[in-house]
Amino acid sequence: MSSKEHVIEAALRLPEKDRQEIAERLYESLDESDDAEADEAWDKEIKRRLKLVEEGKARFLTWDEALRVITEGGDGSKKA
Image (cartoon, rainbow, N blue to C red):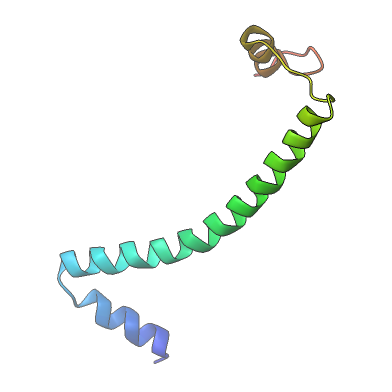
């Protein structure tokens, strides 16, 4: 039995509350690495968009215009 299988078997013998705590902590450990990558990507995107605004190259939409783009698509075709 591998060490991974041993840990899983031992965890499954624990009371439900303990298994829930372990599951939450394992999930959080995965979430942190994903969040770091997402945060980095969003930081890059925000800087890109801010640069466009500062250079006067950004195109701003009213809510009605944005809603129309979302529902009809940028090319005028209806979204399903």
